Image (cartoon, rainbow, N blue to C red; front, side):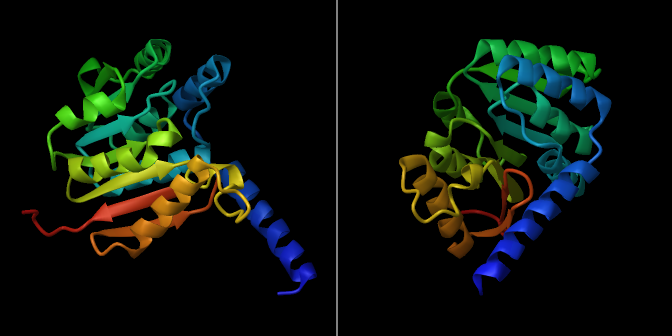
Length: 222
């Protein structure tokens, strides 16, 4: 590929990403949660990634979902937008984030029985959760622990369940071979290892901040 072709490809990718972001219509209650998230400094997932996880929740007919990293509630609301009958268990170590998320869910008229908020470190909470009991696990917590959290996620989802990892491109760092810091290396390793693993089906979306989608085999475990 010539240098000119490379520049054209970069411009085309940026244009496609911008179009995808602008074409996504975010429900009003999620827009309000996004505004609160930005005020709080809890960077929410982009609308385009939100629409993707809502679609996955919908086609999965998800009834039990775990979210690692509540933030201000944006990703959780997107998941329940796709699966309104689901029960969401969301974990965060920041009480302030959980408080803002609770308010966002209340404003969105999500029934209290549909959302379970757990305050604590995911590394402490996840080992106590039931194996093979969830349809979807979303991993959006501290990136230093992403590999550990995904391993827990794959244990928690039922056969045929899905683990979702937004922000997996780490702001473009993963694609840059010069970047070798620990977090970038962890995301890069996660992508390569899951793509080559016979135990999961993996797909990587590059829209927005990126979304790694991992589906486990339907075969019973054990």
